Length: 320
Image 1 (cartoon, one colour):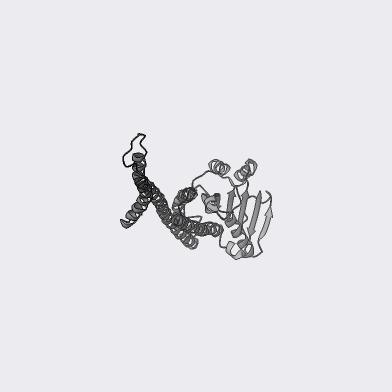
Image 2: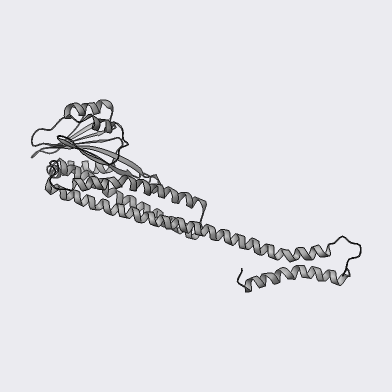
Protein backbone atom coordinates (compact mmCIF):
# COMPACT_ATOMS: atom_id res chain seq x y z
CA UNK A 1 0.00 0.00 0.00
CA UNK A 2 1.32 3.41 -1.01
CA UNK A 3 1.00 6.62 0.92
CA UNK A 4 2.55 9.88 -0.22
CA UNK A 5 3.48 12.97 1.76
CA UNK A 6 4.28 16.17 -0.16
CA UNK A 7 5.69 19.29 1.50
CA UNK A 8 5.98 22.45 -0.59
CA UNK A 9 7.73 25.70 0.21
CA UNK A 10 4.58 27.41 1.48
CA UNK A 11 1.49 25.20 1.61
CA UNK A 12 0.55 22.69 4.29
CA UNK A 13 1.60 19.02 3.89
CA UNK A 14 -0.42 17.11 1.34
CA UNK A 15 -1.06 13.49 2.32
CA UNK A 16 -2.54 10.94 -0.05
CA UNK A 17 -2.70 7.24 -0.81
CA UNK A 18 -2.55 5.21 -3.98
CA UNK A 19 -0.19 5.02 -6.96
CA UNK A 20 -1.25 8.26 -8.66
CA UNK A 21 1.53 10.40 -7.15
CA UNK A 22 4.20 7.71 -7.11
CA UNK A 23 6.73 9.61 -9.18
CA UNK A 24 9.55 12.10 -8.85
CA UNK A 25 8.36 15.37 -7.26
CA UNK A 26 8.13 18.72 -8.92
CA UNK A 27 10.77 21.36 -8.27
CA UNK A 28 10.54 22.82 -4.79
CA UNK A 29 8.48 19.92 -3.42
CA UNK A 30 9.83 17.37 -0.94
CA UNK A 31 8.10 14.02 -1.41
CA UNK A 32 8.10 11.02 0.92
CA UNK A 33 6.60 7.81 -0.50
CA UNK A 34 6.04 5.02 2.00
CA UNK A 35 5.29 1.50 0.76
CA UNK A 36 4.24 -1.21 3.21
CA UNK A 37 3.39 -4.86 2.59
CA UNK A 38 4.91 -4.52 -0.85
CA UNK A 39 4.06 -6.75 -3.79
CA UNK A 40 5.61 -7.34 -7.17
CA UNK A 41 3.27 -4.85 -8.83
CA UNK A 42 4.10 -2.02 -6.43
CA UNK A 43 7.84 -2.65 -6.75
CA UNK A 44 7.61 -2.74 -10.53
CA UNK A 45 5.84 0.62 -10.47
CA UNK A 46 8.72 2.11 -8.48
CA UNK A 47 11.20 0.71 -10.99
CA UNK A 48 9.30 2.21 -13.91
CA UNK A 49 8.68 5.69 -12.52
CA UNK A 50 11.98 6.22 -10.67
CA UNK A 51 14.35 4.08 -12.73
CA UNK A 52 15.61 2.15 -9.73
CA UNK A 53 18.14 -0.56 -10.44
CA UNK A 54 16.72 -4.12 -10.69
CA UNK A 55 19.05 -5.32 -7.94
CA UNK A 56 17.58 -2.86 -5.45
CA UNK A 57 14.05 -3.86 -6.48
CA UNK A 58 15.01 -7.48 -5.94
CA UNK A 59 16.34 -6.65 -2.46
CA UNK A 60 13.03 -4.99 -1.61
CA UNK A 61 11.20 -8.16 -2.60
CA UNK A 62 13.17 -10.26 -0.07
CA UNK A 63 13.52 -8.85 3.44
CA UNK A 64 16.57 -10.75 4.62
CA UNK A 65 19.24 -8.16 3.84
CA UNK A 66 22.18 -7.04 5.90
CA UNK A 67 22.47 -3.34 6.72
CA UNK A 68 24.20 -1.67 3.78
CA UNK A 69 24.50 1.47 1.68
CA UNK A 70 24.78 1.41 -2.11
CA UNK A 71 25.25 4.47 -4.29
CA UNK A 72 23.75 4.57 -7.79
CA UNK A 73 23.74 7.25 -10.46
CA UNK A 74 21.04 9.47 -8.93
CA UNK A 75 20.08 7.97 -5.56
CA UNK A 76 21.26 6.06 -2.49
CA UNK A 77 19.86 2.67 -1.56
CA UNK A 78 20.03 2.07 2.19
CA UNK A 79 19.04 -0.94 4.29
CA UNK A 80 18.65 -0.43 8.05
CA UNK A 81 17.08 -2.38 10.89
CA UNK A 82 15.14 -1.68 14.04
CA UNK A 83 13.40 -3.76 16.68
CA UNK A 84 9.95 -4.03 18.13
CA UNK A 85 8.81 -5.60 21.39
CA UNK A 86 5.00 -5.47 21.43
CA UNK A 87 4.58 -7.74 24.49
CA UNK A 88 7.16 -5.98 26.63
CA UNK A 89 9.16 -9.21 26.90
CA UNK A 90 12.80 -8.77 25.97
CA UNK A 91 13.00 -12.41 24.89
CA UNK A 92 10.45 -11.75 22.13
CA UNK A 93 12.28 -8.89 20.42
CA UNK A 94 11.42 -8.81 16.70
CA UNK A 95 13.77 -7.31 14.08
CA UNK A 96 12.26 -4.85 11.61
CA UNK A 97 13.87 -4.17 8.22
CA UNK A 98 13.59 -0.86 6.39
CA UNK A 99 14.74 -0.20 2.82
CA UNK A 100 15.08 3.38 1.61
CA UNK A 101 15.77 5.18 -1.66
CA UNK A 102 17.18 8.65 -1.03
CA UNK A 103 17.43 11.01 -3.98
CA UNK A 104 17.23 14.70 -4.79
CA UNK A 105 13.98 15.94 -3.28
CA UNK A 106 12.46 12.56 -2.52
CA UNK A 107 12.57 9.66 -0.08
CA UNK A 108 11.04 6.25 -0.76
CA UNK A 109 10.76 3.82 2.17
CA UNK A 110 9.77 0.17 1.80
CA UNK A 111 8.99 -2.12 4.73
CA UNK A 112 7.15 -5.38 5.16
CA UNK A 113 5.84 -4.86 8.70
CA UNK A 114 4.60 -1.71 10.48
CA UNK A 115 7.45 0.22 12.11
CA UNK A 116 6.33 2.35 15.09
CA UNK A 117 9.36 4.64 14.84
CA UNK A 118 8.58 5.39 11.19
CA UNK A 119 4.98 6.18 12.10
CA UNK A 120 6.22 8.61 14.76
CA UNK A 121 8.39 10.39 12.18
CA UNK A 122 5.44 10.55 9.76
CA UNK A 123 3.24 12.18 12.40
CA UNK A 124 5.96 14.64 13.31
CA UNK A 125 6.37 15.83 9.74
CA UNK A 126 2.63 16.19 9.14
CA UNK A 127 2.32 18.29 12.30
CA UNK A 128 5.53 20.27 11.70
CA UNK A 129 6.17 20.61 7.92
CA UNK A 130 9.09 22.98 8.52
CA UNK A 131 11.25 19.96 9.37
CA UNK A 132 10.46 18.34 6.02
CA UNK A 133 11.34 21.52 4.13
CA UNK A 134 14.94 21.00 5.25
CA UNK A 135 15.21 18.23 2.66
CA UNK A 136 14.59 14.55 2.05
CA UNK A 137 17.88 13.76 3.76
CA UNK A 138 16.58 15.39 6.94
CA UNK A 139 13.36 13.35 6.73
CA UNK A 140 15.43 10.19 6.55
CA UNK A 141 17.45 11.41 9.53
CA UNK A 142 14.23 11.75 11.53
CA UNK A 143 13.29 8.18 10.62
CA UNK A 144 16.70 6.77 11.55
CA UNK A 145 16.86 8.77 14.75
CA UNK A 146 13.48 7.43 15.87
CA UNK A 147 14.45 3.84 14.99
CA UNK A 148 17.80 3.99 16.79
CA UNK A 149 16.40 5.68 19.88
CA UNK A 150 13.81 2.94 20.36
CA UNK A 151 16.72 0.62 21.06
CA UNK A 152 17.29 2.43 24.35
CA UNK A 153 13.83 1.36 25.51
CA UNK A 154 14.60 -2.21 24.47
CA UNK A 155 17.87 -2.09 26.41
CA UNK A 156 15.93 -0.95 29.50
CA UNK A 157 13.73 -4.03 29.14
CA UNK A 158 16.84 -6.18 28.86
CA UNK A 159 18.35 -4.56 31.95
CA UNK A 160 15.19 -5.23 33.96
CA UNK A 161 15.18 -8.84 32.77
CA UNK A 162 18.85 -9.20 33.74
CA UNK A 163 18.20 -7.83 37.21
CA UNK A 164 15.27 -10.18 37.76
CA UNK A 165 17.21 -13.22 36.57
CA UNK A 166 20.17 -12.31 38.79
CA UNK A 167 17.91 -12.04 41.83
CA UNK A 168 16.20 -15.33 40.99
CA UNK A 169 19.52 -17.14 40.52
CA UNK A 170 20.95 -15.83 43.80
CA UNK A 171 17.78 -16.73 45.69
CA UNK A 172 17.40 -20.22 44.27
CA UNK A 173 18.73 -21.44 40.94
CA UNK A 174 16.00 -23.15 38.94
CA UNK A 175 16.01 -24.92 35.58
CA UNK A 176 13.64 -22.29 34.16
CA UNK A 177 16.26 -19.64 34.95
CA UNK A 178 18.72 -21.38 32.64
CA UNK A 179 16.21 -21.28 29.77
CA UNK A 180 15.58 -17.58 30.54
CA UNK A 181 19.32 -16.85 30.45
CA UNK A 182 19.82 -18.50 27.07
CA UNK A 183 16.75 -16.74 25.63
CA UNK A 184 18.17 -13.36 26.67
CA UNK A 185 21.54 -14.37 25.29
CA UNK A 186 19.97 -15.11 21.90
CA UNK A 187 18.29 -11.70 21.97
CA UNK A 188 21.57 -9.92 22.67
CA UNK A 189 23.36 -11.87 19.95
CA UNK A 190 20.62 -10.95 17.46
CA UNK A 191 20.82 -7.27 18.38
CA UNK A 192 24.59 -7.23 18.17
CA UNK A 193 24.67 -9.02 14.83
CA UNK A 194 22.00 -6.69 13.42
CA UNK A 195 23.37 -3.39 14.69
CA UNK A 196 27.05 -4.05 14.00
CA UNK A 197 26.99 -3.26 10.23
CA UNK A 198 24.70 -0.26 10.81
CA UNK A 199 27.56 1.61 12.46
CA UNK A 200 29.50 1.50 9.18
CA UNK A 201 26.47 2.71 7.24
CA UNK A 202 25.88 5.64 9.58
CA UNK A 203 29.59 6.49 9.56
CA UNK A 204 29.36 6.89 5.76
CA UNK A 205 26.17 8.94 6.01
CA UNK A 206 27.79 11.22 8.57
CA UNK A 207 30.69 12.11 6.29
CA UNK A 208 30.60 15.48 4.58
CA UNK A 209 30.65 15.89 0.82
CA UNK A 210 27.80 13.58 -0.20
CA UNK A 211 25.60 14.77 -3.05
CA UNK A 212 22.44 13.47 -1.38
CA UNK A 213 23.15 14.59 2.20
CA UNK A 214 23.92 18.23 2.90
CA UNK A 215 26.70 19.28 5.22
CA UNK A 216 24.28 20.70 7.78
CA UNK A 217 22.35 17.40 7.87
CA UNK A 218 25.43 15.19 8.10
CA UNK A 219 25.98 16.53 11.62
CA UNK A 220 22.64 15.03 12.66
CA UNK A 221 23.64 11.67 11.20
CA UNK A 222 26.78 11.87 13.29
CA UNK A 223 24.59 12.21 16.38
CA UNK A 224 22.66 9.07 15.39
CA UNK A 225 25.99 7.30 14.92
CA UNK A 226 27.01 8.27 18.47
CA UNK A 227 23.73 6.87 19.81
CA UNK A 228 24.32 3.62 17.97
CA UNK A 229 27.83 3.32 19.41
CA UNK A 230 26.40 3.78 22.92
CA UNK A 231 23.79 1.11 22.24
CA UNK A 232 26.43 -1.27 20.94
CA UNK A 233 28.53 -0.75 24.07
CA UNK A 234 25.48 -1.33 26.27
CA UNK A 235 24.82 -4.61 24.44
CA UNK A 236 28.38 -5.76 25.15
CA UNK A 237 28.01 -4.80 28.82
CA UNK A 238 24.71 -6.70 29.02
CA UNK A 239 26.37 -9.75 27.47
CA UNK A 240 29.04 -9.64 30.18
CA UNK A 241 26.40 -9.36 32.90
CA UNK A 242 24.48 -12.24 31.39
CA UNK A 243 27.65 -14.33 31.32
CA UNK A 244 28.16 -13.54 35.01
CA UNK A 245 24.57 -14.61 35.73
CA UNK A 246 25.23 -17.90 33.93
CA UNK A 247 28.40 -18.44 36.00
CA UNK A 248 26.46 -17.75 39.20
CA UNK A 249 23.75 -20.19 38.12
CA UNK A 250 26.30 -22.94 37.48
CA UNK A 251 28.02 -22.17 40.79
CA UNK A 252 24.73 -22.32 42.69
CA UNK A 253 23.80 -25.63 41.04
CA UNK A 254 27.25 -27.03 41.83
CA UNK A 255 26.99 -25.84 45.44
CA UNK A 256 23.56 -27.42 45.77
CA UNK A 257 24.94 -30.69 44.41
CA UNK A 258 27.80 -30.55 46.91
CA UNK A 259 25.36 -29.96 49.78
CA UNK A 260 23.28 -32.95 48.69
CA UNK A 261 26.35 -35.16 48.44
CA UNK A 262 27.54 -33.99 51.85
CA UNK A 263 24.17 -34.80 53.41
CA UNK A 264 24.14 -38.25 51.83
CA UNK A 265 27.72 -38.89 52.97
CA UNK A 266 26.91 -37.87 56.55
CA UNK A 267 23.82 -40.06 56.51
CA UNK A 268 25.86 -43.02 55.29
CA UNK A 269 28.50 -42.39 57.96
CA UNK A 270 25.81 -42.36 60.67
CA UNK A 271 24.23 -45.62 59.57
CA UNK A 272 27.50 -47.48 58.98
CA UNK A 273 28.22 -48.28 62.67
CA UNK A 274 24.55 -49.09 63.21
CA UNK A 275 24.83 -51.67 60.45
CA UNK A 276 27.82 -53.20 62.23
CA UNK A 277 26.07 -53.34 65.61
CA UNK A 278 22.84 -54.83 64.33
CA UNK A 279 24.74 -57.24 62.08
CA UNK A 280 26.94 -58.46 64.92
CA UNK A 281 24.06 -59.09 67.31
CA UNK A 282 21.89 -60.54 64.58
CA UNK A 283 24.17 -63.47 63.72
CA UNK A 284 22.18 -66.66 63.23
CA UNK A 285 23.97 -68.89 65.79
CA UNK A 286 22.58 -70.96 68.63
CA UNK A 287 24.98 -69.68 71.31
CA UNK A 288 25.59 -66.00 70.84
CA UNK A 289 28.22 -64.18 72.90
CA UNK A 290 26.88 -61.57 75.32
CA UNK A 291 23.36 -62.92 74.90
CA UNK A 292 22.18 -61.97 78.40
CA UNK A 293 19.38 -59.43 78.71
CA UNK A 294 21.52 -56.48 79.99
CA UNK A 295 23.77 -56.68 76.97
CA UNK A 296 20.76 -56.70 74.67
CA UNK A 297 19.56 -53.49 76.24
CA UNK A 298 23.08 -52.12 75.85
CA UNK A 299 22.87 -52.82 72.08
CA UNK A 300 19.53 -51.01 71.84
CA UNK A 301 20.82 -47.99 73.74
CA UNK A 302 23.91 -47.96 71.54
CA UNK A 303 21.74 -47.85 68.41
CA UNK A 304 20.10 -44.66 69.74
CA UNK A 305 23.13 -42.99 71.30
CA UNK A 306 25.62 -43.61 68.49
CA UNK A 307 23.79 -41.53 65.81
CA UNK A 308 23.28 -38.66 68.24
CA UNK A 309 26.93 -38.71 69.22
CA UNK A 310 28.07 -38.75 65.59
CA UNK A 311 25.80 -35.82 64.71
CA UNK A 312 27.27 -33.85 67.66
CA UNK A 313 30.78 -34.71 66.53
CA UNK A 314 30.06 -33.66 62.92
CA UNK A 315 28.69 -30.32 64.11
CA UNK A 316 31.68 -29.74 66.39
CA UNK A 317 33.96 -30.24 63.38
CA UNK A 318 31.69 -27.90 61.35
CA UNK A 319 30.89 -30.61 58.85
CA UNK A 320 27.19 -29.86 59.24
